[in-house]
Image (cartoon, rainbow, N blue to C red):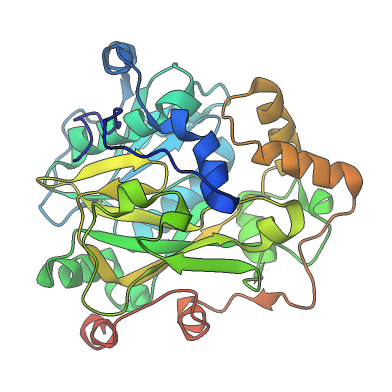
Length: 364
């Protein structure tokens, strides 16, 4: 079963709500976030407005369009747009949920950017919004889902960019590529770098720590995501892993999922963005990327406090982080286990990402 044409999932008799401890138990508490209520689709469709940019951008079958949810994202835009353009992205669709910081004016000046807006509660409608944008702008094309604080990197990007990666995926019949999120942080207390520009963050947040990452089989029920994942086809090579927790789990007690399907071909049978991290009906590739995640840029403590008070989403991770900073105002993620990021190849050697040997031969 795939999702509806707006990307949201609806309750089905054979859907099993995840139970148990750990990740599955946490995801059980989030279940309502991923199930559309009767009338949600019509309510969402009526709410969407075209704010700026091309309504029907010109594109080729191998074009890649970025779909990004945004609210008050001006802080990230220069770095975000520059990075993904350099990879080979030809068009951006920003799904705005109520920006008031100059984001809309900034994006209106970009000829390769379309902005849609819905002012419905984003925690309830984010999947529907991303799925809608993907189907509207990427039908029979490649879509790259990216959050504003994520920078995608993969082996071979300097030689071939996204066009070379897409050629490889299509040659082998894949319709989605996984990525593993890597939390980036500085060798400093986080409150002391709260006001760094996003460009400065790219230099100073150069460390990571994967010692607390927990890996599970892709289709394990223990992920709490097996309903979605069992609808996908895996490569014949080594089975990809779903990863959880990491440094945020170790420091704050968060039970966060680190695995995503960011790059998806929106073709027949594919349901895009049915979950913030996942699409269904896809053939998962034997190559993975890294999503460098800058959760602690842009005054993270202030954002978490604002999110906690607004109750925009029910996962409680912002409350865990606020409590962590309250207990230790000089909190740092750095320890002697931290390593300096040197690119995706080292992370492959460390087992954090997986690549088939043939990819490295074909991409270069």
